[in-house]
Amino acid sequence: MDTLTFSGGTLFGLALTVFVYLALPVTVFFLLRSRGRAQVFPVIAGAVTYFLAVRLNDLTAHLLLFRQPVGVQAAAALELVAIFEETGRYLAMRFPLLDVRRSRAAVCYAVGHAGLECWSRAVQMTGIIGKGIDLNRYGIAHFTAALSDEAAKNVTEQLQYYADTGLLVSLLDCIQIITNFGVHTALSLLIFKKLIDEGFRLRVLAGAILLHYALNCISWLVSLTGSRIFTSLAGIVTGTAIILLVSRIIDGRQIMAEIFGVYQLRTETGNE
View (cartoon, rainbow, N blue to C red):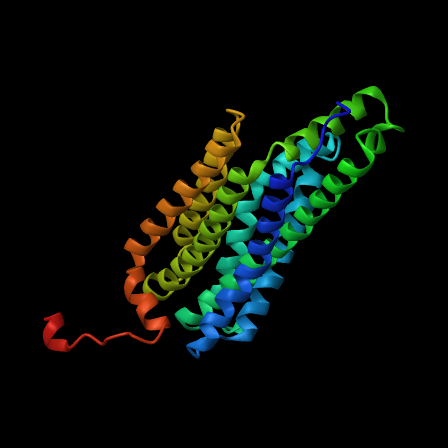
């Protein structure tokens, strides 16, 4: 394992992933701003709600499984996160205090929600790049010298996993980041529009949770194959399917046209 290194393509791909994580929320916000549709307060509300939802999710998993290893708690948190995130989104849409009263505000909420998630993962990815640079510079002994054999094996396997990322996987990951951002936007609009059309019914929340869970679950199941490429492709395909399904349910084309300023009113004659 002394020859374990991060290739230049791997480091470039990871850096590209960090760039997409950081740039995507900013790009979407300024695109909305260029159309006069940006609202800062819903963005802040989305970020705060996401932060609280994740913290409550982690705390719940810890309290339920405090006697279990950290890995088991992390796996449980991954299973529960859809419930907490979508409940937070539902409450933010339901109560007028957070000022999510129009479709464009719902999109801004999604920018804050998904944006904070993107930035937190960018920080994690930056740490991985740092480990890769240290690995190339000092070798695997820099990470395993003071560890037991079992712990050293786990660290080595983790570093090998990251080193095997490759440029192609990183490019697919970038596409998946964009797709996941679209899913957050779609679910925000789904909950917002359905709450307006159907009232505060919990089936709207249940539907959002199931769609979010489907995205996480399918990606996890495909990851059992051990193929990073298939896992990323599964996430992209599932995310795209969710976006298209939600768009069909809420007439997403009309909503996007309205948000970006080219909405055409239907005449009463045409509706008749």
